[in-house]
Length: 413
Figure 1 (tube, rainbow, N blue to C red):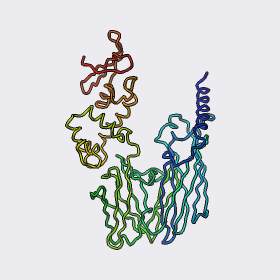
Figure 2: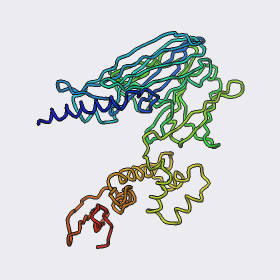
Figure 3: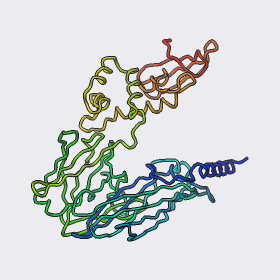
Figure 4: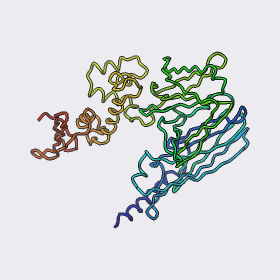
């Protein structure tokens, strides 16, 4: 049987199983990321922008005539006092020629709904259907639109993208949460011009005031959101009532948790509470019991006691902070690499005796030193053996599987 036929059978079988499992799969789902941005148009009218994103691995691709096709259909309604004000629908389609891209979470499908409404109380209700399957997602949100700055902000990666032969800022679609990440993100706020008289900015987290960096003000301007080459980008347009306040690299000093932004002073002071989260963080970092087990296997008893006796809000984070290769930022690349290795070891080195591979000898050596430069496999006196070579470190580790169940134990050779 040819490869193409095998692929078609696999896809059809997957679709049938997916239909059986997902007949009632219409719920709030983290696989659908959204961002709600309210942009004032004048003193009484604002534009509601609902941005959405779904990563390629969460779509269902069908191979037709050498092209992988997928998509999502969406309908969004806006209500006031339970009365339907407006309804909009979209049908987004994508086509890819490379199968590997369909499984790569670096690629995503994005879309944008826009409504212009006067100040008031509203509710948004939406349904998103994934093409080639019966599964989908629901979206709902109640909001109050007024002069408050609470909704008048958005997050953007610091790096601009190419669009219409020029560099444009693009919107980070992350459920209105600041990412805890080594990647730089800027915070943009649309503020009434009266705040320009005293644009004092204070950012606090866990009762500590953080550096807010050098803010940038674009007077008498406001952002215009639009779609371009599959991305949601923004331009700047004149507006005599509002200005754009940009706080560069907002996540530089933030750790996970809530934080506050206080803008202005005296009568014009306003406070905004936002959240910072590690979206793509390693699973083992969030499993505190497992994290402590692995740390206890690799680090000293004294260092373990340091964590257990700590009174910090997040003792594991603060333990790694002392080892941070970039102490000028909150994100710790060494900590991230450690726990991503734990995740990989958990799956790659598990065996019948140890269902958690991160606690095996193979897993612990991998966590400590990373991938070896060379692995030799064979048998010695009918016992399976692996020898891991780390050339740059001038180290080698010998493991024997005496049990015969895949549990390789480290031994001095």
